[in-house]
Length: 176
Image (tube, rainbow, N blue to C red; front, top):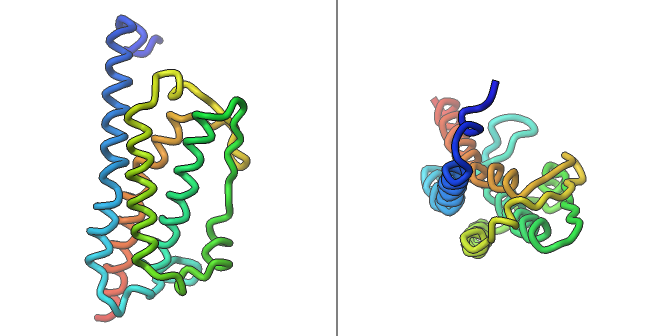
């Protein structure tokens, strides 16, 4: 059975795709403010508290976001600029341990998130249509497109903001 968009004129589906992309870009741009708002709810004594073995504290989540957003900024650039792009995966748990996220200062991590997002958002707004059609290979997950990149990173900071809020709720409930 054909999808509804298959029965529409090409210019209508192009408008839909652009509208959806613009919404994802707006969500991407809003991510740092959402992360900072969640972080503002964390009491200082709960900042390094881990809800369970193997789970991250609010502090570690923010430092992870800095590293992840730095990687993400490069990933979209490789996808757009390279002829046969290969996007490197990484073991986020290994990074958290090896780079001792609790020892990393929080403010530079937040600035890295904001800077990577602002710089990359400027790029996203001016990418030509052909760039969105580019496909590369991710070393861990296989085929990787610019469209898929945007779908992942539009929600990335929102997901981590909710993780911080869940940490705070768990911390408060354990305090009694």
